Length: 367
Image 1 (tube, rainbow, N blue to C red):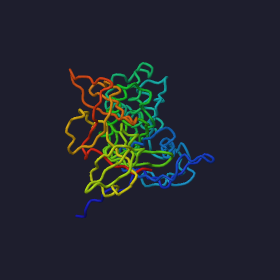
Image 2: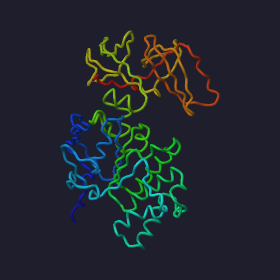
Image 3: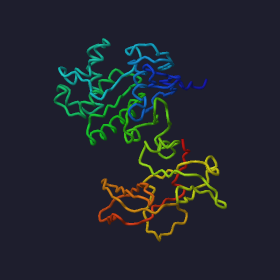
């Protein structure tokens, strides 16, 4: 018997895609491949190009240059209704005069699916989102979270191989957002569909994605798994945009057999890093707040680096406490630690040492 052929064709592939509005370049020669069944999030600030890229893939905008392939077929000039995709928007886009059942059934009716099959598929969709009991209600009778789940059900009821989502949770409150993030993640796992998701919310991207594509100024800054972008950012922008960060800018120097970062009056010991730890190299040292420990000025610092700080404020965030500190030179340093009942509070103005293990810091080249 011959070996089984493995499907390697990506669900979405864009090649040197460009979008200009007059002299303004909204998307600058972006190339990206998305595998079948992958959950990819386009993340970035306003104006980074993430929504432009989504609109080009969906067919709601036409590229200035470049090519778009969906499931191996050239879709660059295809209208939206011939691209075989589903879309979920922030405003739900439910028809208020129709019941929940009728809203979900609508895309099947447009495709002339037999009535008996429509009934079965809508029932399956309602069961999947656990809302069978609201089938005969109108959208206005539902909560925001329920309406968004109906919007999702209406999208996947006709089994599109690709679903695009543009800030779908932006109108929900924090608790509902978190619930819906888990709901969408569960549906993705159950259905195995390819999802391309747009958000400016870093926590949302970290929670839901197989891969994050971080965008800036119409180009891709960095892409990879959530772990890679959080723990191994390649630029200061990536380090600052995803998660809180402490960045110490300076130059690498050699002192005996070791390398150090000289940043102002501070000399911070470094782990060996042949790719960047060359004499006089301009870099930034990244230390995440959860890796910063606050100790007394007299505490043992063997195997650690750190700076002297003064406590400015401490903020309770439920299970964690975030401390805002300042060095004598004025740089803000953030430390974050787990909270527990009876945990003593740090008084403002207390002088301490903010330190971290050498392996918990990462060197980032200066742009």
